Image (cartoon, rainbow over all chains, first blue to last red; front, side):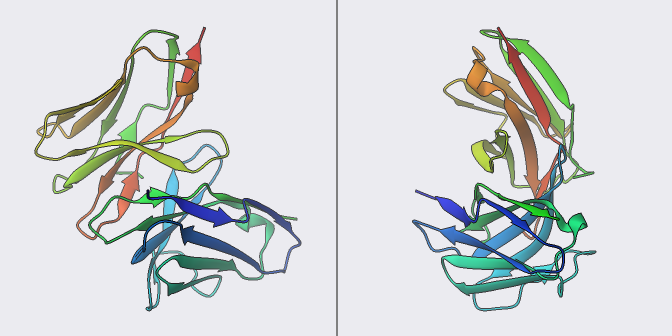
Length: 115
Length: 110
């Protein structure tokens, strides 16, 4: 149990376009999902916490209008990178938990390259 | 990640034991975690330890926790080539957010 998927695994887009990344919990209901960003050879940086049915909570320095998060159901959260620029190129990873007090299970990540 | 520190690299010979060290700062963390990341992949939960434990063993993995010194270690016995990866330790805050170390790149040589 506790499988989390992400789609797409890899995306290349032109500067100025928007990209949507999906995070799904496949075999459990996730009340909370987290979105992280990872630069090459660096640690994971928490971007936002997404709770089902409510607005996401963004970490300091993360632009909420740039990174739109929607958690419409207990198994799906989406991250939309709006008007993407080359500096948004990164590895985006989500995690999901059954409840806030439980262990986070991570998705396989999405590699975004903005040209 | 600044509050959790790890050494960046470890090279170990196949069959030997690997020890990865980590220091953390949040003494109220209830759990401490070790995650493994292979190239281009997400994070795989390896093991975790409850803060009131000193040691936890799970097959080839042994976690030691020194709460007084806020020091956590992961020992991998009989290290194999498949153990080559980046290992992250993480602490959890009161609001259930994970803070990760920078990751230790483990290279297993034949």
